[in-house]
Length: 101
Image (cartoon, rainbow, N blue to C red; front, top):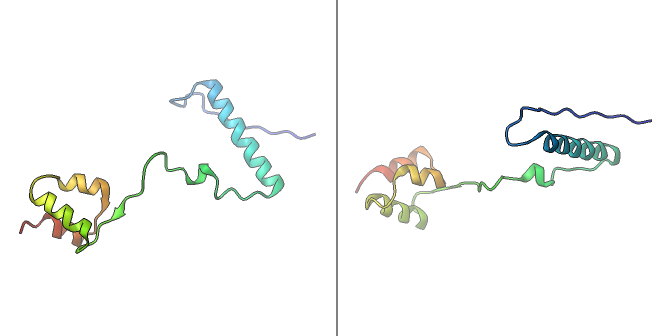
């Protein structure tokens, strides 16, 4: 005989009780089978899902993207906050972008 149990949070926002049970049951089965059959799930969608958020790229001084952003900032087309929401900025790059020439 085999027995298992999976807990749920009945107060979890965004899910009703049936969804919580279904989710909990699915994950319990998944991990039980992964352990039983030695399945590596590191490439699993749950492990790599970004939930619609894309990773920000870094902005480097002297690149065409940097020059375009600098021109837009200088002309008032963007704010530094808008740029930071799209790019990772080092302190040096941020300093270069915020200095008007």
